[in-house]
Image (cartoon, rainbow, N blue to C red):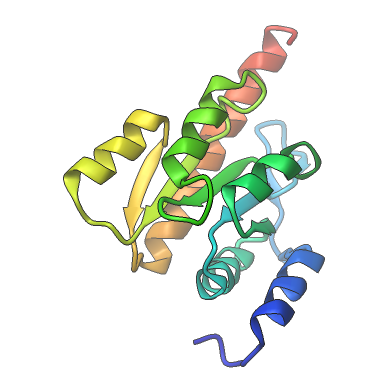
Length: 170
C-alpha cells in the first residue's frame, strides 16, 4: 500500500518517533506570519490505517502522532496537545464514542475537533458518534482527498476558536 513492508512494531515505532512535516509549504495566519501546520492525533488500533492516514496527512505538513487505543491517547493528551483528533469507533478497551464523550466533558479538550472514522456504515452508529460529540464522521475506506479536506476544515475551526479565546483574554 505504501510501497514498503514493516513489521507492526517497527511501523508504530517509526510513526511515533517522527514529526512529519512538509517544509516546502508554510501556512500563513491572518497576520501574515508563518503558522505551524497543526498536530493531528490518530487514534486507531489498526497499524495499516495509522500508516495510511499518516502518509496522506504528511503531505500537508501536519505533525502526526498515533495512539493504539483511546486509553493510550487519554494518558498522553497533555504531552500531545492535539489540534485535531481522528478516532476509530471500534477499538479494544474504550471505544471511540466513549472517548469522544470523555473529551467533550473536559474543558481543556472540548473544543478540539474530533473526526470519527469507522467501518460501520449504519445510521444509528454514525448518529451515535455525532451524539457523543464527534464533529464529523467518515466511513472507511475514506478517500484521501476527503480525509485531507476534513482535517483542514477541522483545523480551521480549531484556529478560529483559539483566536476567539485569545481575543477574550483566556
